[in-house]
Image (cartoon, rainbow, N blue to C red; front, side):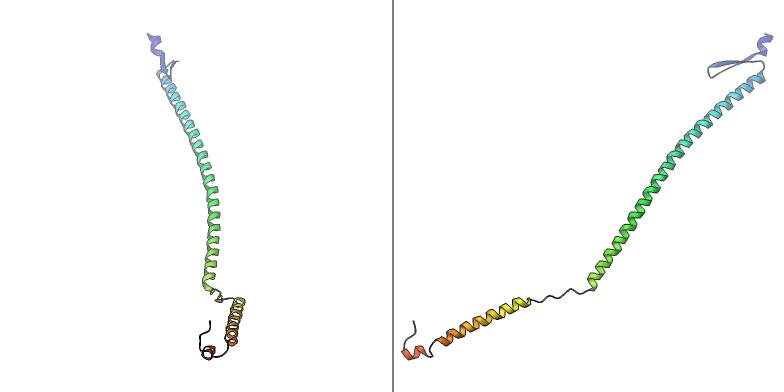
Length: 140
């Protein structure tokens, strides 16, 4: 039994390790625990780096989108200012006055009225004066 006392074994993670003393067993367990801890930290670091790369990509996309949207906003504001200026100019200048009738139409109307008046006068002057009273009958 002396020999089995001096030898201790560790069965962890599916394999066996033979050690000469209990202190060596404790140190081997501590080493395995530290190796597992290092592996977990490396895994967490990989995950964090991956998340960081994704976040950087998102930030770059957001920055590009933000710049595009800022340019569009500036363009729309300039267009709005231009339209406001045009509206102000429209309200400031009086509407051009148009004559009721254009000049050539007024001249034609005056000529037509003159011709009509001339025709009526000619008709009146072509009749003999007091034709009804002279003949004693009404003209037919």
